[in-house]
Length: 405
Image 1 (cartoon, rainbow, N blue to C red):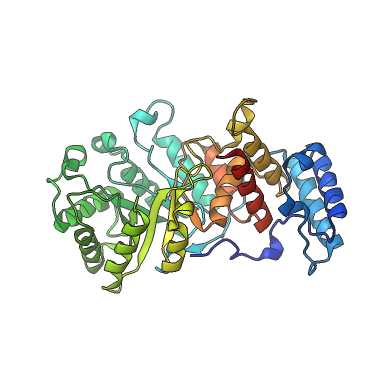
Image 2 (tube, rainbow, N blue to C red):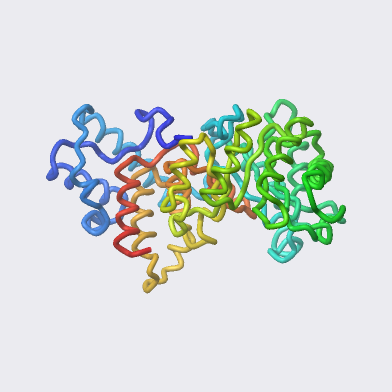
């Protein structure tokens, strides 16, 4: 699933394309000054990939004018548009080879309904309803949940699945429903958390999904995933279960989560024998957790037509605007965050958070950051509708390499 440059490049922010190094530096310094960043930022953060790039097929003057407009807009908006209401984005990609269209950035709901994460104290159902509505109104059309998310609130009707289901049903008439994904927990004694029977064999998967559908208030789910492999279930048994899920019409698409490269290939092969596409593999992936990239999983997923869904894309808050604004001068991440802030600034005032999410989109993944506030929802929406260019992606990776992160 190659999504990095599927949008109209002419409409997207790019580094200023000039035809020699001197004018490139001059243009970058002007941009830096216009943003109030200071010319020193360029020398400190810009890599040779940016400084020496030349785009001979584009008129430089026309491109510089476009960039100045972005700079003025950025200066007016401030360094981050995190709290600015963003117009709805229709930015969409295909989920695997399923035909399902989703926003390139989704929302993860691990903390929804979870008292241990502050539910019922620092945030509640009303707060999360506003979060959901803000995200959906802004163009986010993919919400990921699981049967065990917020399981302690099931009896109150406020587990993650129950909240997502209720919020989806409350959307105004005529509003398209988001794509909803949930998961099957493979540990045999999951019944101690969510009820039902002891879990062995594919029939327990069918029973679990039917309970999930009750909580979601749906007849079928858009995407049903194996939460993680577990020794009591062979991969063959799990894939047979997903086949039956499809045969019974209980899910439009099926996927896996926390699967290694080899496990993903095996799952794809087993489903392919039945003519069923493996839609996705959900893994931990961020600028600070790059195992999917380094192991070859990301590239193989693209070859197979499997979407990589990235959980913890902000590295538990380490890759956010808030982290930069804390001003921890000694932090080993600070040079990276400052670079991301600069790149975000020249892309119309995007925040560190938005750059971190957009980087993953450009790598071909679908990030699903957690979200417990309207401010966060607006910030996540701001990662839609634009793309970092090749040089900006390369510059971020060069900085990562130089810091040995």
